[in-house]
Length: 464
Image (cartoon, rainbow, N blue to C red; front, side, top):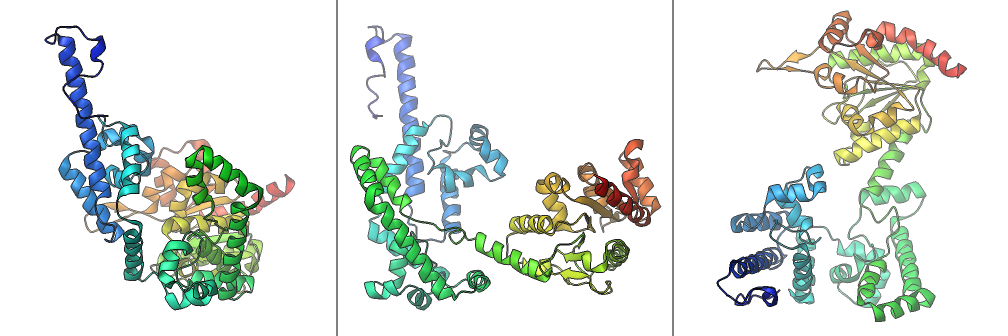
């Protein structure tokens, strides 16, 4: 695309008279293309010409401000053009700065996607010499405290033999090879689960990655890649990514902490399954704690106390509950999984329940389980009888009604096997408020009636 506006595009097919409307239309079209190219260059300059030594969050905010001031981004068009942006719930401009520009997406309807993609690749190759970019990465790692030189040298003896600065080695080679920049409590705990020393494990991983990489670089596969790269340079570019060998589950940051948390949860469950599970937020809410005790005592009479597991899932209170039947197991889910992101906690909770394989699970106002059911509710209900334990709604200081009976009943009623109401008044209120059909009204009952139905359902399951 050129910037010469004297001769409109496609002039060979235009009338001889320069004053013709066709000439004017072609000229306007050419001018619009030139302006689109200018917008593309402006975005490339905004996104690629800023030094990368700033923290990532601050750099993103500054880039968003520059693009917003330039008026070269159409948020409504971007959201409608790329449906995945709308479903992600992310700010469209933030998505464009962090992902969209690098993926070659257009910022507005007048900019061609191919032009943006080619320009981004060209500027990305030509801007900042490699040593300066490496220096920026080293400064960012050191400033953020994400690199431990002494530990890195001890875990990677080949770094000492190379004579390189440990931080430079990590930025230039170690990160691509999947090496850890500093000790991780989750990694050390994972090594303990496997009965290995963390340093020995790190060395083993480094040797295994080097061995796999050597197979890619040499032998029949390496020769094939070299011949193909001679014909198509993009294959050589992709080959560099292939050589960055990752060994699951060690290469993914969430994977190791998630595995460690699951192991500790099963350790708290004594590595045994359960026939009934009770989930509550924590042990500091008297009404919820009393209901959980009554429920545990009732279920202990049906399944036996050793078959009951009680989980405190929310991190804003005590993760233990007193007054439970003897031999009833307690799992402090909140304290074990507190370092995990909330989405990962939901996933781990669902996987824990599925692995414990309880026949019956009661949710006594566990916020984590209620939230997890939005994604995993139907899958979980296919193998476990789920009951929601609901209390009367309460008014806050502004006079607004709040409570799980108001927020969760309607959206989860079809998934639940039953709803346990605090008393008969709440049973009548739920049936009346939500116009529950008579054929389904039996799903809403008090604790005593629900407990009396469990042995019948156990017999039905046995007969099947």
